[in-house]
Image 1 (cartoon, helix red, strand yellow):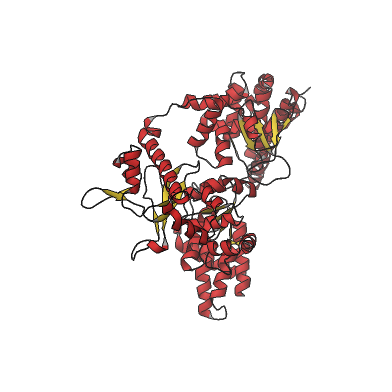
Image 2 (cartoon, one colour):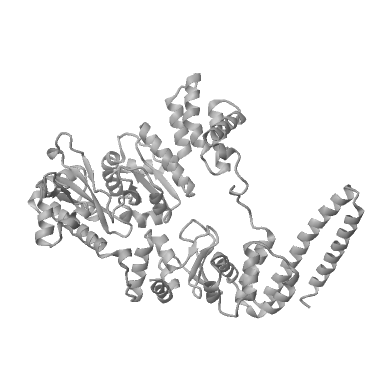
Length: 588
């Protein structure tokens, strides 16, 4: 399988594929354009045909042709690989454990069931009432076709009879697919009966499950209004967003996703022109669903219920999304109970509401201030209990500071008071957060000058391997640490082969660094003299760093009255000065 993956990547024209989504212009060794994954006015997105890679030096997105298709289309690895394989004529050999016959049968039977339900809704007399119901909900024929809506008959075994006797599938397969249920006394019956059917599709468009909405006239006491497929080998509710397959193009183009609760909310919003809408389908938002959206956009608009449960869901969703680095806004419902009602009856108003979405932290704070009396001590206490624990979880320290000040202004107290209370909440919630271990504390550091120079030198040596001999000789007394130093030493020691081959042979922990170094340096026409100049700059920088260290140590020795140490350090300093003078004449 690994050989086939490499074959697909090798046969795919990465410039041609990415060129279907991005206007690329040849610049040196790369093709350059505006990044499709974030907004920018100055192109920082590079595609290198030789290495089969893309890299954005603005947002950091990068990878091979399979990764690009996954990110741009919002599909998983398998789907992206299959699409590319079909384009380049590679027939994939699938392993049973990966995509066995049982799984294939489940997908086949689900697709067939979706067609059957759709025919019953659109063509049969039995679907008249269901069509009437959808028409009353302003779900027109175009929306019915777009979402492949269907209808399940009232009978106990209509679907089972069709699939077993006419199509030859076993009851075992139907049960595994979640389409039939066992009777307590033996035998089976159709799970969905008398319902409008909403096929649930994965990111590639394959039907993996169903949600059924009972027709109002057929509803019985105690029967659920909505019925969902059970978890199966192919359906995991936490990985599915209803309407994602239909909305993904709009999400990518508009650069936002509007997240609603139910299927009807989603379809009505889509019909009102907000085609970037998806639905969580009545479940709590999951990390997998966030990841699905993050492939296409960096902004999510939440439109969930505004009751207590809905506010809690908004908070949980915002926490998950922010950890993934997404921006969260909230669409405030006004003049209707849910997006479905507003989008159906007032499509223009719904679009205005979406455009007027507010920051999630603004929404939570404002809603609490509106609900509680800020003039009373109990009201202030309630506001702090509702808002502060949410603000504490803001990972970006600058944003946390901004919202802390806003809350302080609303409460009429000093920002330091609010900050102190938030620190108390934070330390009380997790003692370990107050005293993080230095070994595990995540610290974001800017690359220092030496790292940048070493990275550029790696890229330069890949382009001009003829400079290796001189650079290796010059650097023999220079100590370099970190990934940059390791990558530089590895490239100097490697055989003189092309950049793509070197990246392929590189140790796994250095591969990404080496690829990025080449992509960053390979834009212009780098020559040997440019590489040698980079080496000189790097050596000078290491000498300067050593000088700074020696001066600090000399000062400490002098203050301590340690003349012997001071003299020894002075000698080292003189040696460094001579080394720097030599460097100045290296280029002749």
